[in-house]
Length: 253
Length: 241
Image (cartoon, rainbow over all chains, first blue to last red; front, side, top):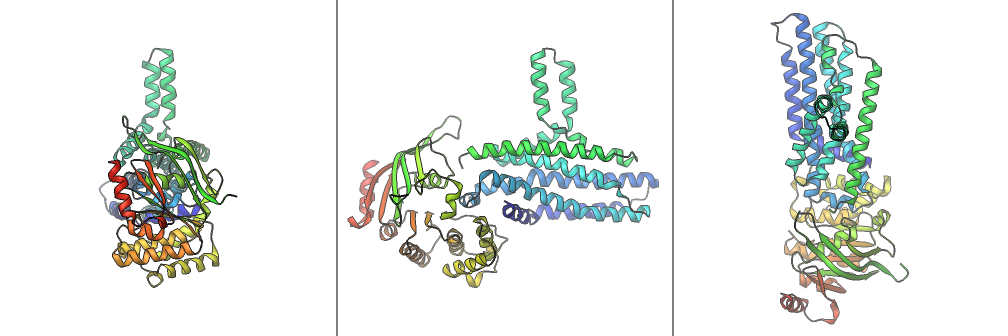
């Protein structure tokens, strides 16, 4: 399984769009350090926001768009047939692809952290670790998105549809609290309310992984919150991958 | 596998129903028995069910009706350690070199270390790609990619080799070399399932040939008992249409 994950990672990091985006975002963050028309505090806050925004953009590209090339296109180009004609179980293939994309995500984030810290050090004159916690949470947020994106790539027959559903899912994931609240407030019939609430809870709450505002205004986020959020991501990702594997095992290829 | 059968299809039917309102019969009530060491040819027009049979053998498709046995047992993932599969032109990660791609496929079979290194060098020599082992696949011609396909299909030293339309993209010399290669595998006791439009080579290479049309098995013949497979093919398919 790890062999497939490793080659998936190699394929991902050779993606020219990803590399170009990575370089562009890093240059943008570096360029942002030259803006001098704000107070020092605002400047640092804006810089941190900009850094976390860059990470979020890379996260979206890796977790939503890369599964197309590593799953859907492999089906289309028949590479999948060759791999599955070897002693590889279908669930192993799914998990390996997931790990490959996740590894890409991790390496991209890890490459960004020292640059961000160096910039903050140059600005603040001290090493600022506060940016690490939100990046860890963003990684786990995108681990859920990757799992769902792989699931949708297996479920649907076109790449466009898979991307579209993944994006809708990503947006709904940030609104899931409001969706539950709207259902609770405005749906009267008890049975419908329960059914809709169950459906709403199937969408993970991705908003819990965004702590950039707290970090920017200096509110400390306890480690227990990070641990709970990570567990939440692990559970959601595992369930999604299990469902994806079950569906893929039964699928005619 | 006491009776020597490597592949057994008993009244197998596969119906594709991927689109909402359409159902397409891939193969209909087909029974096949392929014994050890035999080269078995599948010929027929496009959409006749050749690839469906191959996908069913490989477990890429599931039958709607009937039973399939591999090596005398219900198909299992572990059986694939003994199977090699060569599809028609396929994308192999073009940022890799032949050596790297063979290491990848070799590892999928659980081959590692020195054994894998020796095996990779052996198959690269067999398909005459050794001198190109460090060249990126993106620079390869179709013929070279097809030879790499052969290399990946024999990396595990298979006892059953399945080749699906392998001649697409090969020039006449490449085609001749390819058939020679298959002949040598056959002479070494490898069971081969060969699907192709190249009737001349199918007759030359195969012991038994099945003619398929629209998902039905029209005729199974001993290749040595006939004068021209092409004539029989035209008579069979022409008669059916």
